[in-house]
Length: 447
Ligand SMILES: Nc1ncnc2c1ncn2[C@@H]1O[C@H](COP(=O)(O)OP(=O)(O)OP(=O)(O)O)[C@@H](O)[C@H]1O
Ligand SMILES: [Mg+2]
Image 1: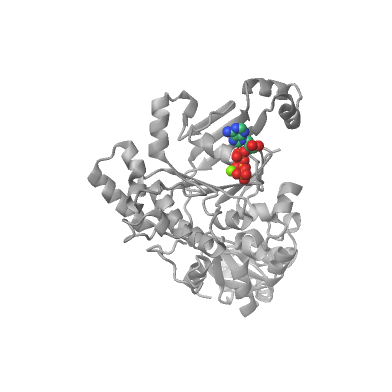
Image 2: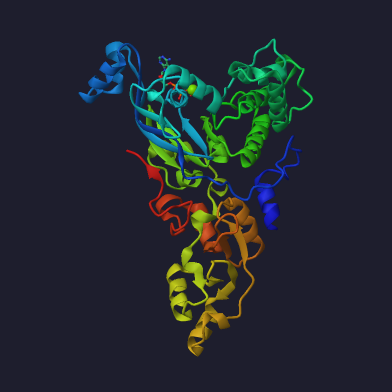
């Protein structure tokens, strides 16, 4: 399959249904900056009277249930630490009552932590005077809710302008920014309608436009698509990804739907009873669940859709042009491979060299540069295995896996490795863990 087509298929553009808006350029990869936009550091949140007392009881050995029994205290978040990077879609998952919404409200200062700190772009929310906190919430954050929370008597435009009005933005600028936001969500021409004239999906687009109109750095989305029927929901997920490819906001997206989490998340955090159980990329979560709770979450997941080429790629199958044929041959035998991908010093693929050809070169004491190479097909590391399967079915030759965006070759996938990757998960995964999706230290986990 042609590379562009592979990418396009991934973004759902060949699904048969026309998307209501499409990005100018198909994103090949999502650029994520490393600066933490949001730092949550040892945060606990207790609801109930004199919540600090509850933490003292906790330290003295009481558990969650005891706290609830004693004074009706609810330990909504329990010593939670995480970092959210600028420009990433960070999904928060967990069963009902696990603390997802509480976490979201702590991020924009709607709740204050009982203990611990929340930093936004390095600034501790607790250090801000009330007015500044309010200003920060209004200018840096956009919120999108499950039930849209639109004002019924206002027009679509009036709803989208609402946040700007609160900020005191002049009328002409409000108009212009509302028009821009409505354009982004594909609702141009609907400005003068009222919410009850719109479908659910359109109402949520208005909700999204309202959040975007204030040009926030951070979008907080709490079960934003959960009230929509499945087809509309899938449309909005795709549109959010397309928007994100252009706008690169920091998005914190709460959901209890695993498919949605896997589809949207650059990383996923899983909460249980207010504690962080695991943080990782979708592939890490599926391939190496941190415990039984996460394993149960992902048990129904189709690995072909959730795992990526980078996870099963084997780095032993990559040979630099200066490598000695005999040692490459040894590595191939060790890894059970029949071919290696020869790469230039920058890591770009030249072609495949077979074990037979390597044996011939080794016998003749010739360099790898003399090898007769076979053409090699490549896929970006973030390609879902489902797409790799299509390629592997068409031709038995191994497929080289490159870093996204045309980076160096990370490893190769043989048919065997592919099948093993689909059949087994976790520790038995065939990839040798050298890739970005299966980092050397494995998924980040917390106790
Ligand atoms: N304002 C509040 N006062 C008292 N208890 C609260 C308050 N907000 C949340 N809680 C409690 O804190 C716990 C976590 O609630 P939270 O709303 O964060 O869960 P959630 O993961 O968002 O759940 P859901 O999936 O049902 O939305 C729950 O036990 C809830 O009852
Ligand atoms: Mg909630």
